[in-house]
Amino acid sequence: LALMFSLTFATSASADVSGRARIVDGDTLAIDEERIRLHGIDAPEQRQTCGVEDTEWKCGAEATDALQRMIAEQNVHCVGDKRDRYKRLIAVCYVGNLNLNKRMVSEGWALAYRRYSKEYIPEETDAQNAGRGMWRGEFLAPWDWRKKQRN
Image (cartoon, rainbow, N blue to C red; front, side):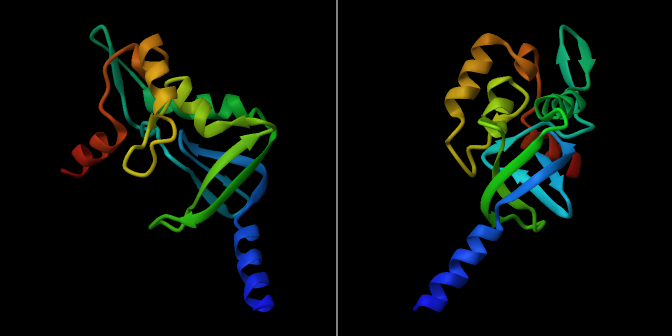
């Protein structure tokens, strides 16, 4: 029993990752060789565009830039214990006490990914009401944009 507990503890503890992050896009980063998907959020894809008053803008690239600014060369600590189908760690990531997942949604650069979590719906509603980030114009939800690209 003690061996089983220590193996379980080692597995969950090993899912915590800390270090300098490389930003992949608005909801994915890498620390060393570990790719990490931010839990409960979905940001626009790198190539995704949004619209404001008949003008297209690169909201996917801006979401990536927003995550980069939040991290600003600081160490990132990610906590998670599940993996997605691409073998990325699903995690909540922090810079100090700043919850990056929550901040991406509250600034309007990601949506609450209701398919997997209801955790960030209040932050999304606040961003929408304030017209922050993507909410300043029109956009397809990232999951709908990906589906459209596949078709």
